[in-house]
Length: 319
Length: 161
Image (cartoon, rainbow over all chains, first blue to last red; front, top):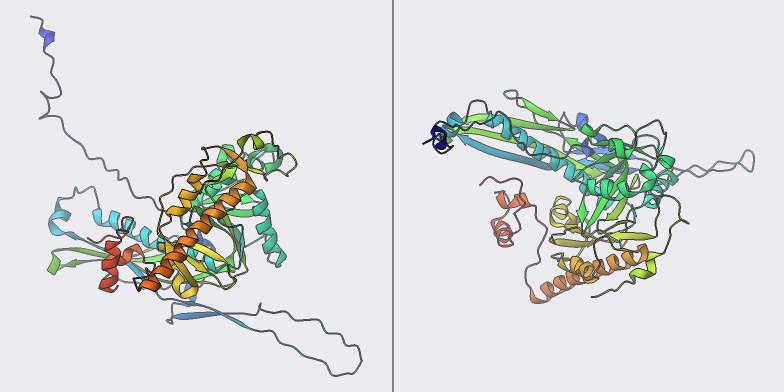
């Protein structure tokens, strides 16, 4: 009998073949904070207390030009109406979890479970603020299209025209916010945006090469510019009945304030555009480590005409 | 509801007369759609819009806008499917808008009917609730129970159980 007829199998060696846990963690992915980074943040005015924060507006009517037709006659005065926009800080969200002593002791030392889950909780709360901001779309005065609209370049330009016709500066403090579906599936299919003949300088790599419109910054959710206006994408852009509520917004369209307290005994997470506090303490009665992550904030539409909703149905794309 | 389209009618159409980026025809995208609890509201300018439950709850829409009714979102997708379009099928933009509008109107009709029936029979009128409320002790117990029965908390991101 040949000596090679009975090679060792994995089953023969199973008691010596180990399983290895790598130090890598597959973390939950969250949307980037594009709205909180862009819209008007008045958090710095909220540190001294208070729950309602006012921003007076004098945009609700215009002065009319008077003519002094008779020299020496008494003049007619006029006055503008005020608008009181205010943000009420009334939302206190939290995520809490507790890890028992036995489990903490037995979790492999290379994994800091508390930090991993605290980060996940902080991201969850960061996104709650994003959701609240994008949810303000319903109070925007003007919408381009509706649930039956298949977004095309025409709607994009109508949106820009609408904002500029109201004398808002479309060269600064303005941005597009598209759902990734709208950006990749609908706008990505518009030849004008990737065709070399129309998209811009030939010396710059186009959408097919870079995935962006001009020079973007993917890690920030920034995709470049469209008609000179910055483009951001976020999965938190609201959808309803297969329609995405994309936005073209001036900075003053929405406002928010974060009023999270600071605990000197534990570090707070200063995440993108939102201050989320994380606290951990040992709870004797539970024989475990309790972690609570929280955020206190308020959001409000400040100037309903300073942007447009760009509705886009996901049922069809441009042919 | 069946809406039929003449495919050949559009096959030879050209959109050369339009400026780049605009189009006469659209392509059916057959995106998978899971019907969701949907609430309908009317704004002061009489614009009617639909919002999914989480958005309506977060935005406190019941306080901000006139509540028109609620539905489960099924009629919308059924109306689109009933047109028997194939994935990638090209139809005119106008026809697509007619189809999508009819789907919206059909869903809105169901929503209004649900509200009218509930008022007539004195049955519960659902209000939009955030998924987190199921786990939130500060939410009245009856609301949490209702939420549990509605079996609509599968997407809850915050689960303290």
